[in-house]
Length: 208
Image 1 (cartoon, helix red, strand yellow):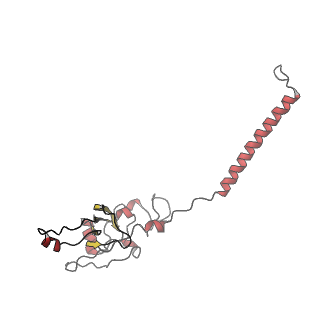
Image 2 (cartoon, one colour; image 1 turned 135 degrees about the horizontal axis):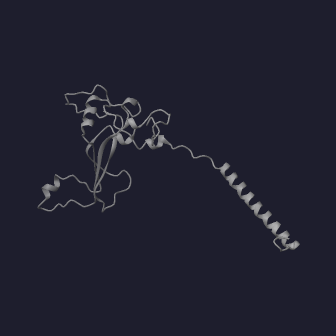
Image 3 (cartoon, one colour; image 1 turned 90 degrees about the vertical axis):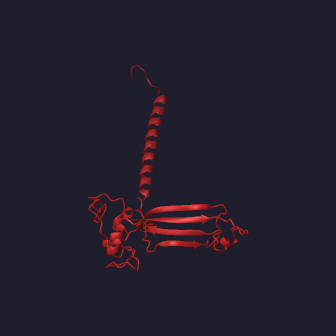
């Protein structure tokens, strides 16, 4: 009897079964959750080698190069210039001065990762460059009587692309180009090569 009410044997049995069923469901859910947690492996570390393949030093500039697609063709109505700017030199001083330059660098260009003293510690600290790709479309050159001579001297750019690539001539770029080594550390004081964790790095070091 509870608070003046008396439960019948059948009601007491049903209540007991409900409590037992609820307890069993909770226990089963907890067991499944524990089993799933055991089955889930920890996330694998990022593939920094693959990521770094997107940041490789470009050792040669392109003043002007007319190219034809090696496979397929360009859309006939694709006309205009696509520009892309960003870091392109990650091993400092790896673009030698012109042959007629009076100052010759003491160190030649080196592949990325060969001389870590010349490598930047973050890809965004690399020397910047600009890439321009001009799509000419498929317009034919007019060869009327009035402009026949002009057309004869004009390069056929139908369905082709003109590519240009050049580094931005900053003072830092010019100085490192002459010396053939890294002269500026930029934001390197905020990064660390050790694993002490004293400095928060967004990329693993050393950078490839």
